[in-house]
Image (cartoon, rainbow, N blue to C red; front, top):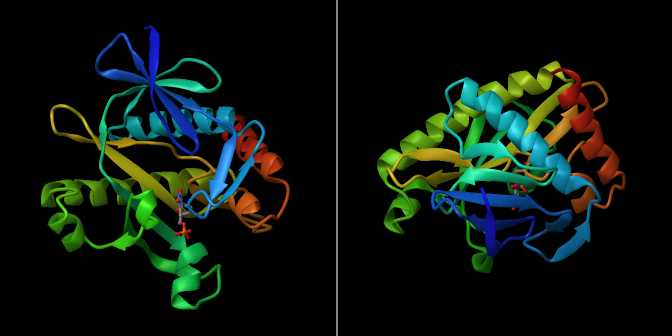
Length: 237
Ligand code: TMP
C-alpha cells in the first residue's frame, strides 16, 4: 500500500490517502490540545502510544464482535484504516462522575454510577461541540434512527468490554469518547481512537489520573502516565 497526499489534519492526527480507494492512513501526532484547541502543547511520545493502544483495543473489540475501521498497523505512529464518513456525533459513556458531568450537575468527581450514562456531543469545533440529544441529531440529519440505535448498542457493548479489560490492568474506566463512521455499504463501524486522550483512566488503588487530564489540568507527569498505561496494556499480552 502506498501513502499518497495528506487529506486532512486534525488536532491530534493527520489522514493520508493511499493507492487503495477504500483505505486511508492515520498518523498520530504528539500535539495535545484542550478546551476546543484553546490550550496547546505537546505530550512527547503520545502519538506512538495512542496509535498502539487504539490498535490493541480495537483488535480486542473486533474479536468480541464490534466492527471497527482498523486494518493494519504500519509503524509506530501510522495505521491503515477503512475510509469512512465520520458521523458528527461524539459518543460519551460515563461510569464514574468526572469532568463536564461533575461541573454541569454540581457533583463531586468519583461517584460510581449504578449504570453507565450515554450522551452525544455535536462534533463541530465552531460551536464548541455542544451537547445534543437524539431528536436534535435526527432533526439536523446527522444520523438516522437506525444509526443511533446501532451506535448506542455498540457504545454500551464497548463499555462492558473495555471496563472489564481495564480492571485486569488495575485501571478504572471512568469515562470515554467514541466516534463512529459509515462504510460505503451503509454499515456503522467504530472509528477514531481509544487512548488516554479520549478516556479518563484512574488507577484502581490510588485513583491517580493516568490520562489527558494531567495535561488539561496542568498536573504534570502526562508523559509518564501515558507510558504507564501502555506498560500495563502490553504487560498482559
Ligand atoms: P468531559 O467530561 O470533558 O465531557 O469528557 C468526557 C470524556 O470524553 C473524557 O474521557 C474525555 C473525552 N473527551 C474527548 O475525547 N474529546 C473532547 O473533545 C472532550 C471534551 C472530551
